[in-house]
Length: 228
Image (cartoon, rainbow, N blue to C red; front, top):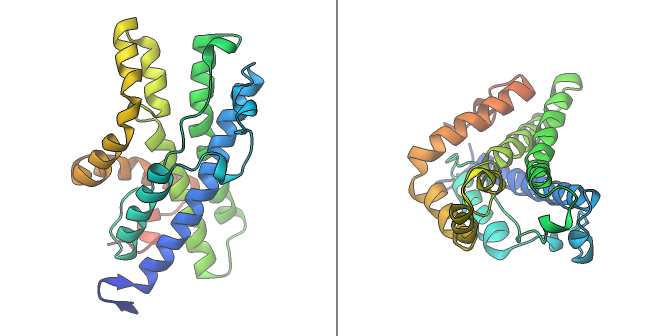
């Protein structure tokens, strides 16, 4: 296998496929959240220009740029870290929707459901119309795995992510305010989980993402991507 130092040609291709997959999946995810919020009576996403698939609407330098770039570097040496990214905080005002608590759940679920659907669609393509080329098949597996990873990642109960917004609904009011107020520490949480406690936390997240990808594609996704 060709490579430069620890960087392999396969790893570089996988990293490129992963970054493109993240861009597509994040665009669909953020559009789904904005669309659901708008349909539920909150015009804020539309007024802020977020009702679009354009990446520039949600791109956040750290969460959408640096974090994926660092993960891509690890992929180039075939070190499997789940694809993760987040965008600018969505301008959503639950008080302007028709049913505050219910609509928070619906909006928070929209993103993970959207990426889950993307992963399933990629899996269906692989099952029904198997691509003739190895690289195209590999790109589809990366897309399915990336989409499933985003689904799992955004359901984590970390302040700033969708999972935390739903968890806050069942907390006492004071605790919920403190919990939501920790959104500003999301970059720190992501660094700690993805890069500091990677062997502990990412083992679980990788297993969950892999299980969803395996179910969608009918393949062992990690093995199909030739990760050690």
